[in-house]
Length: 354
Image 1 (cartoon, helix red, strand yellow):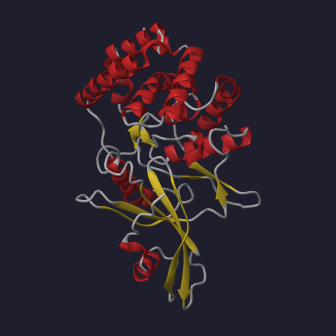
Image 2: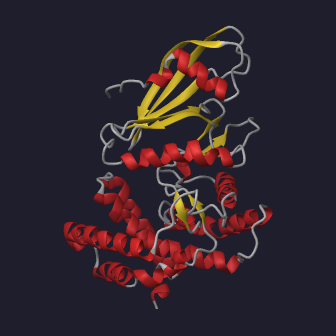
Image 3: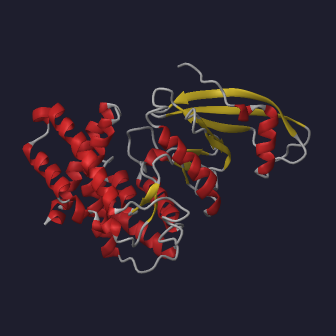
């Protein structure tokens, strides 16, 4: 792994200014910055920075997380970096505290497509529920879904959606996206050959042909929120044993305005094999709905949640095709394909096509 060149924001003087703006550093100043650890994810490069100070620094962070693009995907997925910077710099400050890591600095350069985020380091206090691909325990899943519901509730039918916050797709936008998808699907199906059954080919074609009526739920513009877009359980940080803190959500390169059950369907139907999903699915939907009500959301019944969940699960069959189209590794999209079709069968989602 070749280390990327660090952005100017990690220079001591600039870090000092960023931490002062964030209200976590008063009279002291950053004296030294050291790379403690670095790793690549599929699309990002994550660097843990250690900080040393001169002068009074009580309460100042001893480390920070610097997030930058993975060079292998930097240009192809530049829009994800743009979106994540926008999320942390524009949306996160308007949300209740304790749902996402604090961000001290972020920037996206439109010319070079370089971007970075300087985030609160939760390494010592939080951890993911499991190592991929193990599913969470019941208690971990309840904590994750509860936090997801609170996060959705913060933007539920907010008047700024589609105005100063995000973009609402038009019917024409949806049709164009489906036309693009159909082209990807044809190549995907040709590549798989007899590994994609005739029954699945028929379902894909029905979803493509009926995408306009299927999209009416989204275009109703009711019961929408900010959605994560990649809400698998490994994008949640849970407090370590003995730590009294909240679950935090991270990785916002795919956020959008959408029907919130897309995140639930992606988390459970896309990533959990049938036995585990069947054991937790109903209970977690109950937890999610109860948390919405506790958060002040009204007019959204438990039955409406079920309908939206099945609708979102059906739409999830498109996700493995999109993943394949941008060269996401086969070990990810193939297993996603098998799991989501099992969920579609279990939940009778094909009935939604009439």
